[in-house]
Length: 102
Image (cartoon, rainbow, N blue to C red; front, side, top):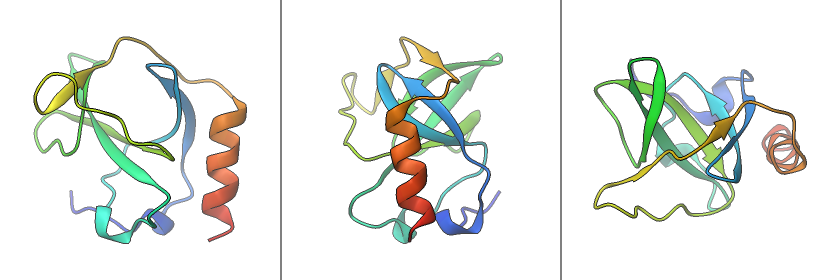
């Protein structure tokens, strides 16, 4: 699937990944379309569960997350997903409002 402009979808779910408020989409987001205030990372799927956060995933792409903070890659080119929860939260609502106002 070809990456799209982050504004081309309104289908974002609120998610907390490793304690970080994010927005989730199962689409690939073109990083060149993001403003400097947003970061995009891909989640690698491992048999129906999110395994790692990476700058780009081409095989086993589980989705893309957007956040307003940088996520350090703690194990080379990725960071393990220790926890995630699709839930309403203040941080994700702030991100959604930011995107909708752009």
